[in-house]
Image (cartoon, rainbow, N blue to C red; front, side, top):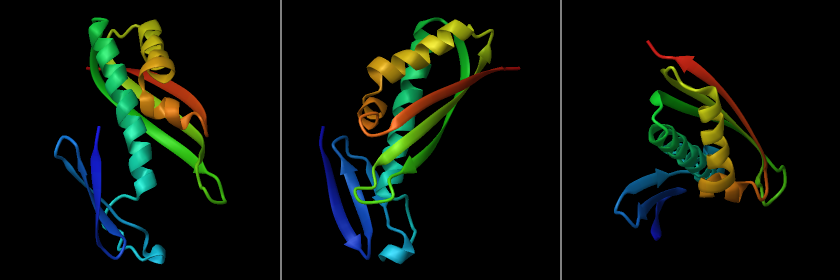
Length: 139
């Protein structure tokens, strides 16, 4: 896996991933940024959310569950001193579908958290991670 980060101006950067996709990042105005794009740490948090959502949906589909939606909200706290690593992250999953089996949803989240989601497992080295979830019956 590769990624190239290029400084544009101020505190704006563009990342080009190894698959050729572009992602912008910017800093807060008090750090010289213009608030035009997510902060790098926000991207890290979003990556962990995307990683686990991908896992959960894939596991549920493979388990023949009629999953219709998956939302993961992340709430994170950071250390107050440098390096300002994440110290606590709460993942809140809302899984919707028709007749979803609660045990299979819980298993999918557990498998992502313990085995498949490289991003959240890596963040777990510095942060306490909590997973909460709810199932919503789809119309």
